[in-house]
Image (tube, rainbow, N blue to C red):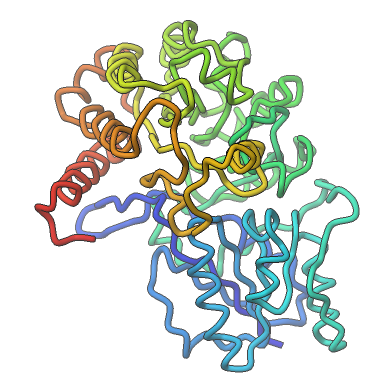
Amino acid sequence: MKISLIQPVHSDFVVMKTGDKSKIFKPAQLTMPYIAACTPEKHEVEIHDEIVKPLDISKINGEVVGITAVTPFVHRAYSLAKELRKKGQTVVLGGPHASSVPDEAAQHVDAVVVGEGDFLWKDVLSDFEKRKLKKIYRNEKEVPLNNLPMPRWDLLDEKRYYIPQVVQASRGCPHSCDFCALSLVYPGYRCRPVDDVVAEVSRIPFKQFVFWDDNICGNKTWARELFVKLKPLKKHWYGQSTINIAKDKNLVKLAAASGCKGLFVGLESFNENSLKGANKGFNKAQEYKNLVKILNGHGIGVMAGLMFGFDTDDQSTFDNTLRQCIDIGLSAISCSIVVPYPGTGLFQRLTDENRLYTTDWSKYTSDDVVFRHENLSDMDIKNGYQYVGANFFKFGSIFKRWIKSGFLSPKPYWGLNYANNIYFKRLAEISSGKSNIK
């Protein structure tokens, strides 16, 4: 039987120019190569990544088609499912959105996978062959993380990705931030055996890779062992952690020695009240500058996640955020407007307070405001978000931050700064009506 796996288009990627070729900076998606690896060998598998190549529905020939989608792009997944089902193909949907609202998703597809789909995928295919496909599949127990199969990277065109391969060493996060939907897919925080991770990394044929983990240092004892055993491989890697990794200087030293060149950290806000309100009080804004300096001092670039639209934000938030982002020497930022994803505590609170404008999921992006703010208008938030992005990525700001970081310049961050400089210029043109791009 032939299986087709589809990664619908996302907007959270950046096109990089490498010589005369364009590459997607966002690393190859792990979900579909991994689901392909979990597919019984008797089946033929293909992957279609719409991020790097437009889909041709006529060439998607699998009897069963698996699709994954996050909330703002689930309408694309539903649209694809409708076309494929008209052709007589069976469509299975998984991912964060399907896990948060499975009953809604089930109206558009033949089957829904809730949570981790590792072992469930074989059951789905087996039930399909027996003509006993269920509408919703749920994990009854945690997926063990030992002896996981190697992702099927051979099914992707690695030349289209700036960083072709990623590794997932742990799942979930020990924290429970109010805006985060991670727990809907990954219950709790679990780590793979260190030796399994190191063995997988050793088989990567490239110098650099990305850890797909949401918090690579969620268990410090495990992380120390991992970093020590990675060091002999002499790879370069990028990952994600809380900024509090820098409070353990020995851990930072081990990470750097293991090849860490950059970390994405969720700073979210420089407003202590906003952090507390989002259940992220373990972040202390007054500590950011020193913690970033520690990471930079070990050759680790810092890309910060920032959000605008917390209830305690006001007009001063945007200037204050921009000033501090430059002052602490961040290598890059990923800024967004607060999004209350379904299934999160934030979504429930705004629903209870009757503050949601819409549940049109296509508007649940980082560029749109979908709820009534206590202090700011929708345009205040949108303009402020664009203001911070546009000015942070100006060439003058890039130079100032380069000096502040101690002249640290991990190669990917230069490309991210350049690409985002162009992106926010275009966004400003669109907002002012000076562009035909929509």
